[in-house]
Length: 320
Image 1 (cartoon, one colour):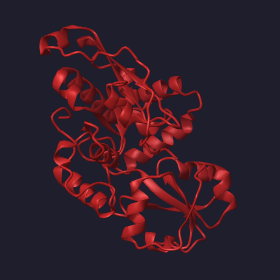
Image 2 (spheres, helix red, strand yellow; image 1 turned 90 degrees about the horizontal axis):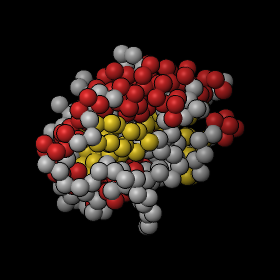
Image 3 (cartoon, one colour; image 1 turned 120 degrees about the horizontal axis):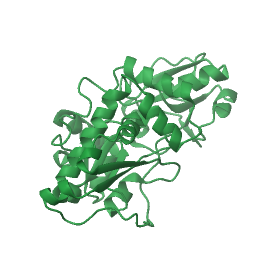
Image 4 (spheres, one colour; image 1 turned 60 degrees about the vertical axis):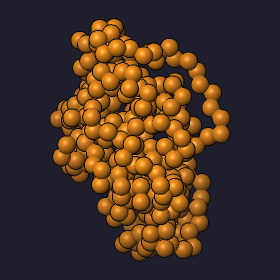
């Protein structure tokens, strides 16, 4: 529902008047700046660290204003940031590696979810105990490497891909349907709809765990304006920590951006994030090992070339 392919053959970029010129460290610190972050879906709790950063504005005293723009269907965060339309964006680690494989100089600077929220849900009366049992089912999902890996790793057969609409009504009417979901969202929606579901975690049950909703920028931005990069990364990391202590700031900012936000659903998602430990023990931090494992998994399904240098895809320089 919330993951759309960023691969496009053409892209129209609208100038947003953001700061792109080379600045000295002193000038960058003194001159008022606006840092714009483009999100990968409509405002929701699963982006809570970003909405808290916008609502709290922790870098305001340093002359840095953070503006968060919600995404939606068709939003392509990685090529837009690479092209200079936005300074920062949100995506998943596998998307970052694919972007670099396609020549985009994207760099992840702070993890969002240490354990990815992606799941596959099914009707509870189906005999599904592991991903191996998904063979023979219809599967609704958007194009993404995670299910390509699941299919290959678990040797799934008889899969019929169907159009993913995000509708609980479609799922409710089709007992054979297995549908992508977030552990923080669809279980809540299914309960309201009176649908009994089970789900498998792509990370925990499938062994495929890219950092989710991470913050990224470009190599050029890191080189030209490291002070701005550090301020934004710090604000977002603090925002994630703030979210699970008190979600009021993030919720208010998200609702202001998206009037369709359900406050109860927002609170459910935050509790699920907190209870499940999805942010990890040190929000924002990433490890070389995790990036290597992900690189190798993507190579195994021929999603990226074997020689891709994963060490250049991320840095912990700004999220400490």
